Image 1 (tube, one colour):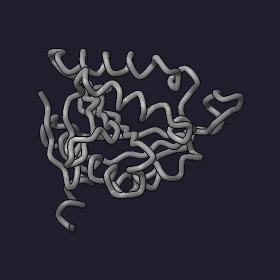
Image 2 (image 1 turned 180 degrees about the vertical axis):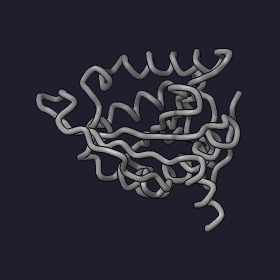
Image 3 (image 1 turned 135 degrees about the vertical axis):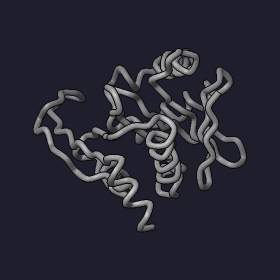
Length: 181
């Protein structure tokens, strides 16, 4: 079982008892703004949680979708790192509305990036987000990620085309950032 301490939050593998809080988190309309209708469906939270729990016992493990938990033990959201190819991984974070803007996503993401570079021995970590999701872009930049590209009108959902921004940080950039901090 993975348990990663972070400033102000803790990352851990999901448990079945997280389902009610996870369903509540995903049912918020503001949370659903940048998710497809399929990913926002009521039963999708149960499917995702079952998948996250199954992934936690895979050997070798390549997907770490972890619960972000408050000091009081409340489920705040999830943060994940997925190995996509040798030494390359994608990262993503989702928090409930009441914890957005309080630094929890920054703390969770920084801990997950450190886990990726130190424990998983990755070379590059990247994130993809809808270009209109300015908060996600700003969050990734707070991790030290730089914008690599923008794919214009490459996704269709919610009745229209959306552009995607790709951000990344390499192990060397991360080490230089840690030294200067």
